[in-house]
Image (cartoon, rainbow, N blue to C red; front, side, top):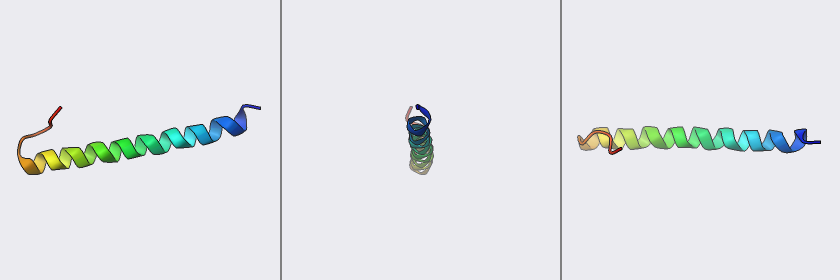
Length: 40
């Protein structure tokens, strides 16, 4: 019975991906405001 264990894991990974994306957008906005461009 792997189903009940796979679904929460998928949801957690999806939430982490959304958080990572939001973090990248925030860093990009900070870089644009500082005028130095992306730091990576």
